[in-house]
Image 1 (cartoon, rainbow, N blue to C red):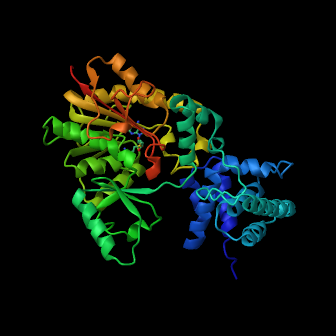
Image 2 (cartoon, rainbow, N blue to C red):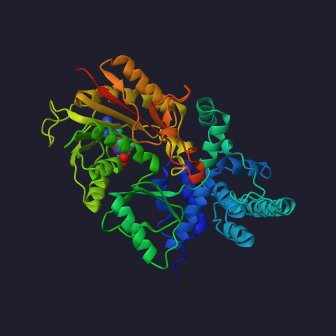
Image 3 (cartoon, rainbow, N blue to C red):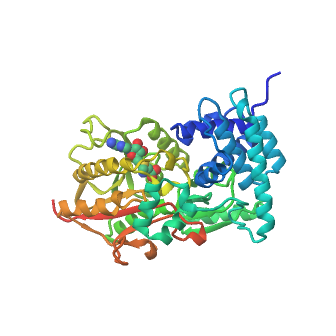
Length: 465
Ligand SMILES: C[S@@+](CC[C@H](N)C(=O)[O-])C[C@H]1O[C@@H](n2cnc3c(N)ncnc32)[C@H](O)[C@@H]1O
């Protein structure tokens, strides 16, 4: 008889793989032998362990005096997986302790007793804390676990947020990163949103809690199986955070204000195609370029499901684009060029809680050099009178505001466009009062509605050759 795969052990294996440098996407194969419900449970355990890593480490340090090596066995990861079940999840204490201890294999055997004792101490601490504090923080469900949002992130990152956004906003950003974000759907049209809502209302079983954030963005506040939602097969929508839709709204409004019709946009760094689909659904002609064949595969699948069109080029924008590329970019200029540049992605930590483990401050410095070179290359495809839109999902102004300020300084033939069509409270210059300049979002913005990813966008018009 084959042994049933163990949910806790698989979760610990995934967590340990991430701690050793794998991304969440690479490490998720550790859950592949589990049944779908066990896979969901194991994934939730890993997400809690990543999001509250600092808090969990601090409470475990009270009880573990000797170092538990992370290799070759899973004892340390299993302890974290045990702790999140007791302190953060709705799992009965006895099951959390017993099942986690039973997930020990031969490699973890020397730590079985210690694990049992520590997890039981956490149960006792939780019970004492719950009875002492009947007004416990319901949002965090964190019985006995000290909640210090910023301590869950590397010191350099927390310091950057404090320096750039002030202590209060930095704390709020960290708080939002510690929680599961809502899910935003971007629709092809406002009519598609109405149709979606009508279908949901008619389905008596559905009680999905939703809110409309813009004419084409709907926020779902409950966990859902995407493929069962109305309009999935018809390709009426795709998943895209509200903040990620704002650069497209700005660009579309700017082109419309200039009464430009039949506009052609070059989307550099396009895959997996969120912004390509959005701009194509608004009626623009798109040429989508990306270096990555596998990511372009996802872009093609996205376009095919949503029945939207774009010309696709696989190329490195830092090298000469082959003349044979179809369509050819040689000597060609566009009404708008969108550069959604590779960045540290710290604005998306809510969805990628593994990211703080892997990012170093020196990565940001390296990326700012790449972005600067990419902006310089993008210029050649912008026609005079056309616009260059620069976007990153980083919270670091070195990858946003400072990058565009520097570009403007060295390119006097460009001028910054004032944001249009966007919520004004999200636009301005960081640390320069409320001057209406770039788009800057952080997870702390609209936090009372579930927040949004951190994004930067600026649009520059080329006024001279
Ligand atoms: C932030 S992602 C783009 C997200 C996309 N715009 C969207 O909305 O779905 C950055 C993309 O840049 C691409 N990229 C990185 N270096 C590149 C290069 N030298 N030339 C072209 N694409 C590049 C990556 O493959 C990645 O898909």
